[in-house]
Image 1 (cartoon, rainbow, N blue to C red):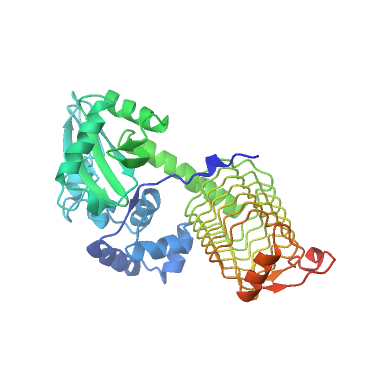
Image 2 (cartoon, rainbow, N blue to C red):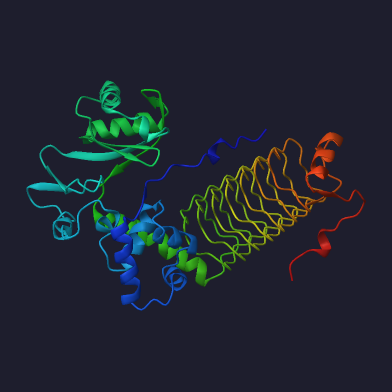
Length: 406
C-alpha cells in the first residue's frame, strides 16, 4: 500500500494585521490608486482569498504578509503590531549588521521592543509551534517548557515570549544550541514539550535580509513565469506556490508532487494528467479546474474549493478532502478509495462509477449528488445516502465522454 505520510501539512508561521495596521493598509490602498482589493491582489500575483484575509485581520503566512505591506509601502512589523508606529527608523537600522552588533527583530507582542544582540554572543532566535491551547499556558508551565528545552539542546536556550496561533514559543540561544534544537525536532527525536506535541520549528533572522528577499523573489518570479507562459510537463515538485494567483494557468502534465499550493487560486486552471501526489492544496480555489486523470493521491485538499471542477478518472486515493467544497464537481470514474470526505459538500456532484472503497463520507452533504456503479458502496450505505438526498442511477455505460469541458 502506498505511504502518503509525506502529505502531512507543515505548520507555517502566520501573522495578523492589527486594527491600526489594517486601517493604515486601507488608507494606503486608496492613496496608491488601487480601485479594489481584487485589482490589488491581481497586481501582486496573490490569491484574492489571501488579500481578503489580510484586510479582515485573519492570519496569513509571513511571506504573503510582507509582500502585501511592501506593495502598500508600509512597514510590515508596524502593520502586524510587533513594533509601535514611529519605531520604523529603529527597525530599518536592524536590517543591517553594524561592525559591533548583530541586530535582530524580535517577533513578539505589541509591547515588545526591537532587541539588539551582542555580536560576540552570536545568539539567534527561533519559533517553536506546539499543538495546544494558548490559554492553558501559565507562568508555571513556561518554566516547565524552558526546563524541558534546556534538557535537550544545551544550556543557553531561553523562552522570550509565548504567542497564540496554536502555541508559539519564541526562543533564544547560541547558534549551536538553536541548531541542535532544530535538528532534534526535525529528526523526530524531540516530539513533545511538557505534553504538548511539537509541530514545527523555524529559525528567525538566521539569514540576512538580502538572502530572504532573494528567496522570496525566486518564488514570485516563478509564479510570474507560470502565469505568463504555459508550463506543460514542467518539473515543479516541492515548489512553494502558496497563496499565489494561478487562475487560468496551463499546468497540464506538470509535476507538482509535494508542492505547496495552500491558499492558491487555481480556478479554471488546466491540470490535466498533472502529478499532484502529496501536494498541499488546503484552502486552495480549484473551482472549474480541469483535473482529468490528474494524480492527487495523498494530496491535502482540506477546505479546498472544487466547485464544478472536472475530476474525471482522477486519482484521489487516500486524499484528504475533509470540508472540501465539491458542489457540482464531476468525479465520474474517479479513484477515491480511502479518501477522507468527512464534512465535504458533494451536493449536485457526479460520482458515477467512482471507486469509494474505504472512503469516509461521514457528515458529507450529498443532496442531489449522483451515484451509480460505485465500488465500495454497500446496500446499507446506499440506503443511508439516498435518505440524505443522493441519487443512484445504477445503469451500464460510461458517461465521462459526454461531460468533458468545451
